[in-house]
Structure formats: C-alpha cells, structure tokens
Length: 311
Ligand code: FDP
Image 1: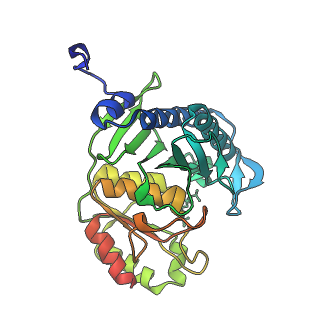
Image 2 (image 1 turned 60 degrees about the vertical axis):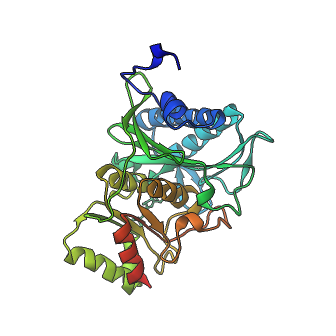
C-alpha cells in the first residue's frame, strides 16, 4: 500500500476486507457484491409497495412481494459475481445452481422478519458463505464468512471472515463505512430475548428458564426479528436470545442453514456461544436445507446456564 493511502478518514467495507481482514480477493468481491444487493433491498423496503405476493414459501409461510423481490435481488447479484456455484435461499425449495466451478456456495435469508414489514419495525438479511459446491452435509463451522444487514432507522452491515466481527453503516452516498471493529460479547447477560414463547404452554423447562429471567429482573429486549435481536446482543456486548421447541414447532421456528448457522459463526467470533441445548450450532450438520433447530445464543455463561436447565 502506498504511503499516500495510509491515512483514511473513512474506512470503507472494501478497504476493511482488503487491509484489515486480508480476505482472499474472491471472497472480498463476493461480500462486496452481496453488500450491493443489500443496498437494493434497503431501497426497495423504503420505496416499494408492501403486501402479499400470493405465493407461499417451502415452510408454508405467505410470501410478501418484498420477500420475492429481495430473493430476486440476491439471485441477480450472486449470478453477476460469477463467484457462486450454488446457493440456497429461505425462499427456494431446492439448491439453485449458478456458475459451474465457481469457488463458493451461499446460504441466505433475503428478508428475515418480513412479518414485521407493515409495522415499520427493523428487519434484515442473513448470509453464510461456504467454500466448494455443496451445502447439504456441511456444518456452519465450515463457513468462511457470515454477515447480516439490518434495515432499521439506519442500514448497518456486520461481517466476519474469521478475524473478528465488524460493523458498517450505509452512508448517504451509498457506501458502507466502518462504525465499530471487533465487537465483543461479555460472558454474563443482562438482557434476554425469548423467541417462540408459545412453546411455554407445552415446554415446562423453557417456562422455568423464562421465569428465572423474570425473577432475576433481567431486561426484556425482543423485537420479533432475529437479525435485530442478535444485533442488539452484538451492539450492547451482552444478552441472550432463545428460540426453543414446543408443541407447534418441536425444534423451534428457526432454520439451521440460513439463520442459526450464520449467527452462530458471528456470535462465536465475538466471544459468545451458540447451542441447540446439547451441542454447538456450529457442529450441527445441515441434512435438510430447511431444517429447523432450537437455538440458545449469546453471552457464554447464560447460554450454559439455560442449556443446563433444559437438560
Ligand atoms: P419471521 O417469521 O417474521 O420472518 O425467521 C423467522 C422469524 O421471523 C425470526 O426473525 C424471529 O426471531 C422469529 O421468526 C419470531 O418468532 P416468534 O414469533 O416465535 O417469536
């Protein structure tokens, strides 16, 4: 790097990937292409008509026009990158093949929390990147990068390529600029974020976990969008998020490949922990693209405490 480039008032995502994370060129380009897709999603959220598309996804959930649009935007950018041999999206039933012999496979949820679109709450996109041409049979620990984009009052992007977790803010000229580097998570949680609470009527152990948080007067922070709730933990540097099974969803509501896997990678990079109650989410094999898993994620001591109570 020339001395003339050494002083930077703004650190762009590209600069950070290149000089700080020293990411392989292909991986850097892929993350930049994904970040471009997210800018279009952000724009569509602000400008396009909401409402249902008339279709349902593989999990039987009604798709919004924005779900379909976001999925298309990601597909187009992954295609254009020529770096992705295949991808799996929460909105698609099967693996979609793209550029043969390209180095990466991608898993993503193009619009997480889309049931909140009409309420104008924050929502997000979640992405995991693997080397090679396979998604089934992989474990989230094999990801070479994970990132999410949060569309809130500000649009922020958080990524890791295995060298810490870093946060960027989308500025007015459309560039992601470094906001905070090396986000970390304390071992103890002061906030809790309990998902799938409908399970309490059939899962007494989950019920006593939640009662424990009430008794200890922890602070409730739950938005109903996993991206926002996980970002709260990374942002505040502590907290716990759970989505645990009950009668309606025996394995909880959340998917291993597109949601829990990428977040487990990011949270463990930040010094936290992610478990399904018995094993690390990072060591769970993806045997079905849309498989669900219970998840307990966040501050280490609280994750271990909850897992012990669920045994
Ligand atoms: P949504 O269905 O709105 O897309 O992925 C599913 C998800 O949102 C998560 O973002 C969120 O954490 C969860 O559902 C909310 O589940 P509960 O309604 O059970 O709390």
